[in-house]
Length: 215
Image (tube, rainbow, N blue to C red; front, side, top):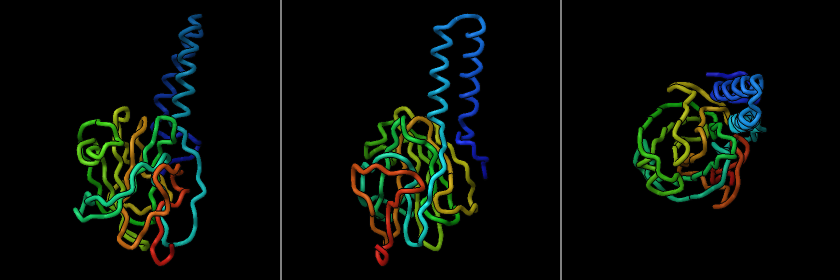
């Protein structure tokens, strides 16, 4: 699936239109306090659903961040599809981050698995298997990766824009999570993290991991 670029994620159009239209209505009838509140809501909706272009790094054997945010965890975890232990890098998105998610490497989406669940704090370990989440397996020349969108306390709507069998380029948009949460990236065995806990990263731009031979 492809989307036109005007700097706003398509999922935000209804929210922005509703807030802007309501602002106009209250302004016309002279209810200025409500009009001001709704104008602020319009700005917030536009800010939240912003979707800026990114400069995607070139060169092989590197994986970029699937999300804007902060690295909160780097540890071995069982892959959602295979159950094998793989190094997992977790990126936490707060409500002020860009929420559009991007694929870490060029490749084909070989599997998508959505799991309804609870809405614990996404920073907790149990969020990986208890919360609402959507896992994607990506196969390409640079290896086999798994990305998982995890909903949290505030974010309760995972958006998937791709389908199984679809081919994506590195840094291409594949979905978003409304109002914060977390994205996990499971690395192939021959990749090592290129980031540290607490580091801030940018989706489609910051290099999260590199192949051992190239690191």
